[in-house]
Length: 221
Image (tube, rainbow, N blue to C red; front, side):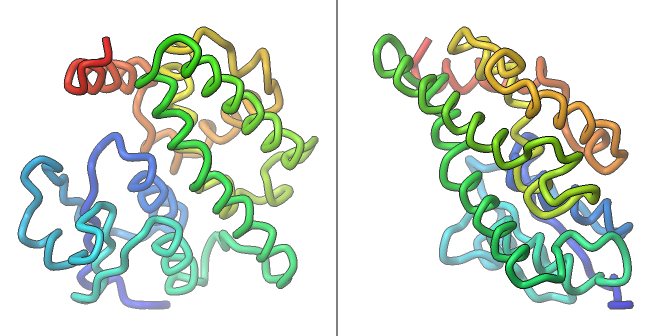
């Protein structure tokens, strides 16, 4: 087993990207130091650890930084490989997992942000897009317990942090995730039964309070 010496996560409490790393570390049972970042006054450690993007999350393992959330999750899976595999061993299934995690990365956060930032026709267009995104993911999930089958895995880790934002999306854009993608809503509930997820994600109402703070900050009320 790889040494856990010097494992630190630079993160921000409500970040779905940082929560991916926290869930992966919890699934693997890795002990680590959590360092909450002030994103308006970024620490010297963060700027040094991620000089290119200057963003969280950053995993620092034995003094070596790993950046970008999906890369961090793969790193965690490979370094602590003796427990709770998050990636399938089959090359094709692994490629599919990476494809759908990348799909979540490119679609969900951006579209979700537009749901609370925009109004009128632009918001309606974003809502239509979000419904299409959720239904595409629902089709991929099908009747499986998790995206990879019976085992909680890479796509689940990539997507599940956004489920605590569903309430905000629904409230801002006036729609129901359960109404448009019931299997995704059921999957989200199953994931919340996992200790790694339940201890990492925040109450959706608390996330909504943060969204309201952002709306005030950006003057989009």
